[in-house]
Structures are given as C-alpha cells and as structure tokens.
Image 1 (tube, rainbow, N blue to C red):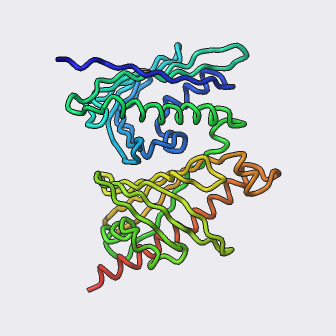
Image 2: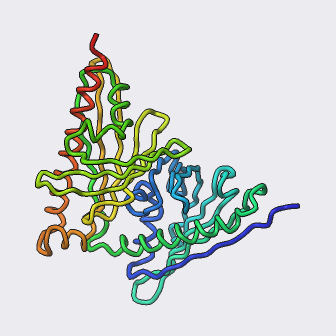
Amino acid sequence: MTTPEIHARHEIETETSPSAVYELITDVSLWPVIFRPTVHTQVLERTEHGDRFEIWATVSSGEVNGWRSRRTFDAAGRRVTFRQDHDNPLFGLMGGGWSCLPLPGGRAKVVLEHRFVPPPDQADARERIARTLDANGAAELEALRTVSALPGGIDRWRVTFTESIGLSGPAQAAREFIWDAGRWPERLPHVDGLDLVEQAGGAQDMTMHTRAPDGTVHTTRSIRLPLSDGSIVYKQTRPPRALLGHSGRWDFHTGPSGGTITSTHTFLLDPAGVAEVYGPDVPAEEAAHRVRVALMANSRVTMEHADRYSASVGAP
C-alpha cells in the first residue's frame, strides 16, 4: 500500500515588498542568523536558476537533523521550489515551495508550502512531522517579516568578521581543545560555567555562562556541529539581547609554515535590542563595533589558550 502524500501550508503578511523577502529566501548563507531552527548551511552548487545545499536544523525535539535540498528560482514570479535529494529518516520524502505574493501598498504575502510522504515504518510520523512544520514554519515566516523590515536593509545590521592566529603546536590539538567545551570553565577565564549535552548525531547542545570585564554574567545557548573537513560550526539558539542571530565557525589548518586557527563570526543586530542594551541614540554602526569587540576579545582568548594547549601536546 502506497503512503499518501500530505500537504502543509503556512503564510504571513509583511510590510515589505515581495522582492525584499525573496532575496532573503534565496540566500541560504543568511539563514543561520535569520531562522532560529537553522544551525548551518553549506552551498554545494548555485546558478541564477537555482542551487543545491546542505542544511542542519533543529526539529521540535531539539535534536539536530541534516539533509540536502535542491531549489529552483523563479525571480519573475518571486517563487522558490525545493525538494530534498533523498528520503530523510525523520521526514520521509519532502518538497515544497516559497511564494512571495504582492499586496496593496508594496506589501507581501509569504506562503510556505510543504508536501511530504512520511516514513512508512513510523506510525506517529504524520503527527510528529506536522508539529515540526508548524513550529519551524511559523518561526521562519515571523523571522522573514522581522528581518525584511530592518531599517536600511539587512546589510546595515549584519556583520561578518574573521581572525586567525598561528599555532605553536599541531592544529589537531587546537581542534580538540575547541571541541572539548565541557572543560572550558577550568581552561578559559571568561567562561563562568557550562552545561553540555551530547546529541546522538554528534551535535553538542551547549549552555554557557560568560563573565564580562565589568563582572556581569551573560548566558547563551548554542548548538555546535563537527563538519567533515574538521571545522566546527555553531549557532546561538539563545543569543544576547542586542542580536537577532549569531553563528560562527572554527577552522584549523596545517601548512608548510605551521598550523593556524581561525574564528569567524556572523551576527545580526536587533534594533530594539540595541536601543535597550546600548541606548536609543546609539547608531547601528557603533553597536556593531561594540558587539564585534566583545566577540573578538572572547575568541582571541579562546584561540590563545588553544594555542598553549597545542604547544603542550606537541612538546617532546
């Protein structure tokens, strides 16, 4: 007996144009700082007509699930259709589409549709998938409404920066230091406490308490993933108040002149959060500078301690 295909539909109205929302949907590199469920994306192929990418996202249980999708772009119609490359153990076979429809006054209706065939050997699959799609679909549409309405556009509020240092020991040892976050409270001076949960698929769910220079303690929650190239990516699922989203990456390289460790941050400021944290008269550029300085300071300390650890491991 063939399992019937099931359809789901979610929609929302925005105060911005269909083209503005369409641009956010087509650029999956933005998704980790826009969509709360999205942990990491990696583009495998891309042309003006579509793309193919890998995505890791949290589902309703909090677990991280990964899959590959192909998409087709219809720029004139402001529509994106998608389908997974293969059956997913949690969702079965899934496809769907995004439509950005014009409304009076330059506004847009955004429609997110899914169609899926549940895994045949899971009796509760239909209800479980429906719950996940309801939760993630509603969160993604609300995020599109918020981000598309950012004053001056997303580029005014989004920052990416990278910093690297040379290593005194093997890069693999520095990677071990970064991945072993459970020991950070005893190894890093700015980490006041840390709760770590290892997920079955290899992801880490990490709640960290960080002490700022003024003595205040800030709590963030992140999901971390080890990638096949040895890098470690993460997404803050509970970012600081001034941010809508924050994701990052640790890279480790070994070359003829020695090893390096690189820290990359991407964050998206929240205008309301910026006003609350820094004051209503602080411009976006100044708020971005303050956030960047704080993140860079923590990354620098972490990389320096990873370097010392790698030197101790590599010492004869």
